[in-house]
Length: 447
Image 1: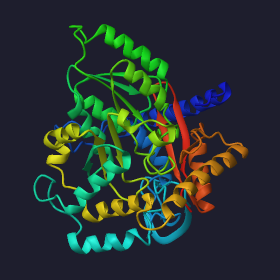
Image 2: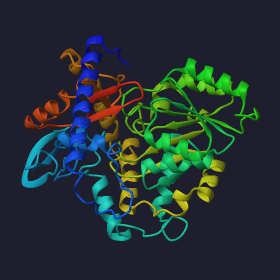
Image 3: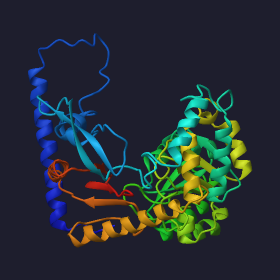
């Protein structure tokens, strides 16, 4: 992470201060003007209180044309962005019939599988004809097809674990699985910059949650030593179990985790490891097997490996790969598996076909070329951005490249100007406990 210059920090905080001051100033006069108006709530408390939706009304709506831009084509390297207009200062946006062909730098489509593919697309169409769009049932009822079983076996083989289980959504994979793995009397030690799905899953588990400094094995060891010595709150009994949760590539920072060092600490203190490879599986490593392959860590040493199919494989859903005992437990205890509709069969077939291309089982070397290209493109793009003077976060080989803008006035200006130049990307306004970070998140594609 870069150190923020004092002048930049001062001007950024001053800008946010102005935005908040003027926002509350406008709210004050709005309450005065609306004082005489009758309310239609008739005794009900308002669902959205003034302070709760302050950000939406006074910050987000002013620049909402920079977010949620609809597209009118497949999310390929180049795609069609629908143009929108507003006649009320961005409070409402209306789609027009015009589109702009833009360079896509804001998609998860790391290997280009989300667009038409010579191997994947025909097989997806065939599965659509055979199985329809949806199973309309959960896996434990009538929603388990041969494709689902094949993909679970293929994922387990691909990541190097004995077994795997599928879920229809990547976010749910974390938020629904963590409460099944650990509960009251357990300890979760989580990286301070873990994804919100991990945060919500940890909160919902009922376990005690401790946070260690981002990607800092030394601080992780300090936290583990202190918590093991102190035991559970009030009773000081030993923890029932301890799980350390980290990400392979951090989605907002583009950094690779210090996996070998963190694994050494976890082994020393007998803590289980939970590795989220949403942004690394299929994107890094010589054969696309993620950070374990890239950093030389044996997958057998990682207790639970999580990943998604939305990034490198051009589909949807997520998976957990672990020992057969853990997977069997999840199949019998996880509500997301028992009650949720299973993955769409065509989406499952898309992942199967994409993984086979990556493994070279389609009879070609296109998978190896895609992996080499995403690595070369990412490193070249990062170096060229740095030469141009941009402040780029993240590590080499990572396909996630955040560019720091800091000042909130730059966010809409930069986004709108790039759109005029037919470049589309994501802008992110991230609020942490100690600072506001404004940056553009570039995700470089295979094109």
